Image 1 (cartoon, rainbow, N blue to C red):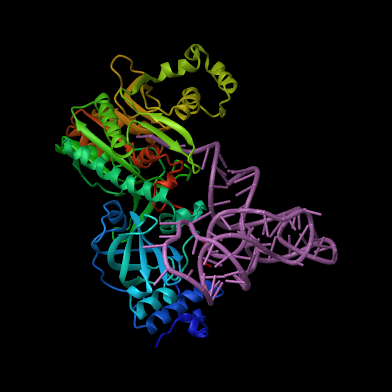
Image 2 (image 1 turned 90 degrees about the horizontal axis):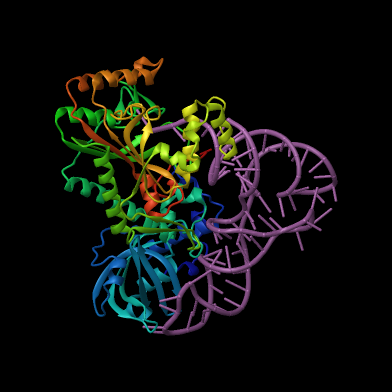
Amino acid sequence: MPAGFRHCPDFYRLFMDPSSSESAAPVPSESELLALRRAKLEVIRALGVDPFGGRFDVTHRPGELRAAFAEGLAVRVLGRITSWRDMGKTQFFDVSDLGGRIQAFLNAKNVGETEWTLLKDGIDIGDWVGIEGETFVTKMGEPSVKVTALTLLSKSLRPLPDKWHGVTDPEIKSRQRYLDLVANERSRDTFLKRSLMVAEIRRYLQDRGFLEVETPMLQAVAGGAAARPFVTHHNALNMPFYLRIAPELYLKRLLVGGYPKVFELNRNFRNEGISRRHNPEFTMLEAYWAGADFRVMADLVEDMVCQLAEKFCGGLRLEHTNAAGEVTRTINLERPWRRAAYKDLLREIDPSWFDYSPERRRERAAELGVEISPAMEDYEVTQQIFEKLIEEKTFDPLFVTHVPKELVPLARQNVDDPSVVDVYELVINGQEISPGYSELNDPVVQRQRLLDQAGEEVQSLDEEFLLALEHGMPSAGGLGLGVDRLVMMLTGAESIRDVILFPHLRARDQG
RNA sequence: GCGAGGUUAGCUCAAUGGUAGAGCAGCGGCCUUUUAAGCCGUUUGUUCCGGGUUCGAGCCCCGGACCUCGCACCA
């Protein structure tokens, strides 16, 4: 029976009642659009076609075929229908996946009546199909597939976003990332690059003898950073666990165990506010290298980031653009990257900064337009100036060295100037992207520093870690690299949400 | 947690306190090489939720939810 939808207008009424549908996803029965798509399911079934088809072997992906196009090929291509041009007896539609699109040309004379009816009355933009046919070029010069067989692989029961404007609502972009990926070329590009960059970081380190390891995410003591942890509970052991805030203390145990070069590239969790630069879970690289120091680690990160930029950004001069395609920022990664001491950077703001009294520094901060809360210590006033007037305004790479020890209590002190520590803090794109250390390996000093840091909360001391250190950790360089922020810098994303597939949002009210 | 702005059709967005609209998508029609296809016709609403003021509220007031931006938190 030729059961085109237009021939049976009562059909959809049978399927207006949502009460039989699954309860997980609420189906707004009031929407005629959704009802029509559901009704088409029965049109399709009446044709003897499975609306959620099975296996379909392919010869090409849509974008591959378009890139390496030749006429006269017999091809089978799988993709989602993303646009449609109806010319009557001739139908044009684009078949796309994340990597690209190819145009399909379907003429009534080339297919059977069932497939023609299927296309005209059963299929919508958004459906997944497999097409089979021969390649050719249209009069307009468009590489195309002349379809001789059409297989429906999945009926889409909801319409796709606007074909021209795409998805712009940031909440939908994040919460329903699949729609963002379908609609927005830039998001597809960003997440493809992220995946390739992460793979490249692994390859880069493995090529240089670093071994990737996995250490606990559930920790009895959350150490290695100063941040509030998430708390959970182990039922069988009846004890609290913390989601790790850093892998550092476990990676250092591995140095004690004799691994000369290790890294971990995975998630950390910090129970803090969400912002343009912060997600509660974020991806961090930590690498440790026995015998190295912070300078060696600085060279390593500089070389690695430049390789990533050359590979994925077409060079070392990056241009960030907004939605309108206007250049909003340029970043020059050409080597060597600037290295400067913390105090020298502050003297560039005010040559006499360190000659002032603490009171005068507060006044001066106000004059410079930097807000200082009364509770701040003197060194925090200086740090506030650094963050607002140096870090946030530095876009080209800058290694900040000789950092005051108050700011980084767990690093090795400088031999010549004990008031500073042997670290770098790499600032690019107005953010700290990577810290690097000459790691502290004196167990006695380490215990005292941890005790000072812990203050009242002595139970937060990681005794297992200190025990390991007493067995001897080789001197080592270590680095951290915020992968999300790195990807932001390399792709020009303005928010961390634009480089994390599923960033955290407040739970939607399901009532 | 604090401050500012926002929430209208499936999507992108309009609407001096006076009949809730456009484009796209959808639906019907025409067209056998189109591509933001075109042309003709046409449908679609809990204006975020709950109160209030008013003859009358998408618009004004109060409360709430959520989103965005900023601040705070953040080795």
